[in-house]
Image (cartoon, rainbow, N blue to C red; front, side, top):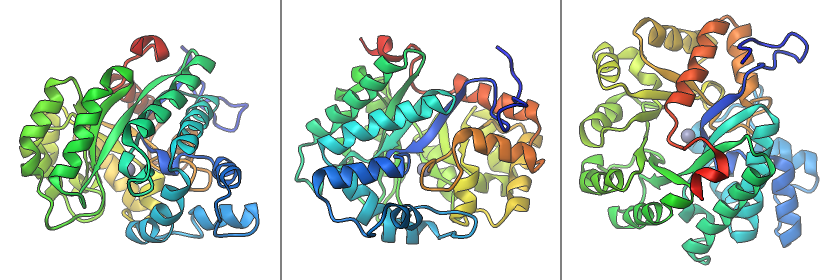
Length: 345
Ligand SMILES: [Zn+2]
């Protein structure tokens, strides 16, 4: 394998990439959303396609705090349009194929299945199977593509409600559900400690664990994660760069961080490129393992994975060798089996 960046194709890496952190809602190409909306007769918030794209996407000229984006766009527009069996099968198929055409050979997609069922109107098993059918279609079409699906639990849900999703993840493990994630804004009622037994059960069933932590506030939730659920990976985890003791623990317990550079810049979780550089250089100095991911490849302008690699190199935040190393770590720390469709048959 030629591990270098192509000179001809505008910094397109010559090597296949692995994406470990991408949410289905923000990974669906806007034209697919547009088609889904019109095929099902949904009202869309904007009259023309380009106005719609402008409305749902962030860019350096249009940044938005994470919670504001979730409240104004993500939940009312994206979740709604990507709900139901028709939308989800098409969304997964198009998203995984699109990733492959953009040089991704291995991809983990994640999402909260209860956010795609129109508040309970759709049956969860139908929802899950529709997604997995979409994934299987993409695997059939692109035999060199592999990956899996991660179920995101929600910090705003009760333990009982989240437990339903853990049971479903166990049930569909052999069909491509590979891990459990915790997501959603901080909530006083939510305590990771309450999930200790459920997580032990999920791990025994062969599911891996990750959690969105250390993204916006501080690193306290990372400490809790290490203590109560012992995840193999942590989503974001950027606040650890300000906590030496925590970095030591991450190295000791071999926890890999799923860093999402452009997402952090657009939602202002990271203030600017200087802070991003400080965080990533600190991780490299302290030997904290991390991977580069998109989080929202289609809802941020020019944010496909290869563009994030190129951006980090062009801004001299990381060297080509360091980026190649990150990609190797991603392949080594994936929760999904290699082998595409064959892995699940
Ligand atoms: Zn995320």
